[in-house]
Length: 480
Image (cartoon, rainbow, N blue to C red):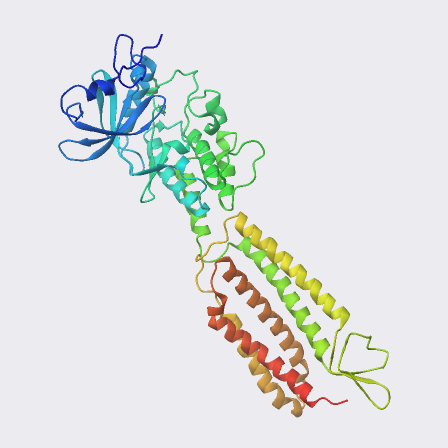
């Protein structure tokens, strides 16, 4: 029958009536519990299968620490005790800003303890799904910590969200090196588990680690790939996983290669890839391959705009029609001439209007798919873009105004160049419309108010003004 502490009910070592913590708390008349003559024990802040973590304060300096003590019922378990002590030894070898520091370790009243850096924050497992840029930044910090440990011959072997702490400033602290193993010749003395025994968390372990292979730094990179995928998507990459958001997917895909030789060669290599991806994701403009899709949608929207303008022009341009050319319900205040023909100032032109409607529907469908792609891949980022480059729009608008202003004076002079002005102007007008939609899409992607882009509207106004003036001049001077 398992013996339990008379005060708190915790399982205890055979022959004892109270657990270590209750013994400590009852060791004197004072409410203060002084561990190893140095640490004032505070409240419990966490617990696990192998021990409990308390907040403690160093009596001499007032420094707050996390004091981890081995569970009382495991004190006589030699393997567990050795693992606990190895965690302290492993951490004491490391001095890195992104690795939990160890200040002291030892035993008190025959119970092992570790005094560690107190991280004011939460484990990654409690933070839920994170924005992709944040995932890339955290991954880069974890890689820096792993690279440091690997250079000192230490493989963590239990990279998982619960062992990655994030403090209130957003910095990463890598914890729990309890099952770590050395890569160097001294590995036999530091191995916590037997060579044929598998330790770790299965869902986060590489295939070779599950098979009990010798420690390899690339095992940690495989585990980190799973952690980053889960942080970005909220699920583990089990079975036929769906792709992670761009550009994280390319990094995850390489980290999760079944063969270690196909993964990143080192934590530094993976950290460089994460840094490059974060820089690319936060860049003012999309990468070139994404820009191709944006420009394709901008072309479709420009064609839809041109079709709509053409349909409107055809419908509102005055015309003289035969009496049977104007079907009922399509005419707007027609007038009949003496010869029986009809004067139509405006009408519903069926084919142009339906054709324009089809082009608009196609453009909107392409726009919707593009927005969905942005949201799915983390490209829809408010405030991620600098002011759009509108120099071409303004320049083309000014050019079109210049062509219009000089076109009229040279036309009576018989210059043949004037014959090509409508064709040239039409091409330039279409380019302006394309650039307008390209800029609008970028503003939508980054939640930048389009109404505040003064230069954009100036260029569009300069481009639209000449054909508008030409059209109204034509209508004003038209007669049957």
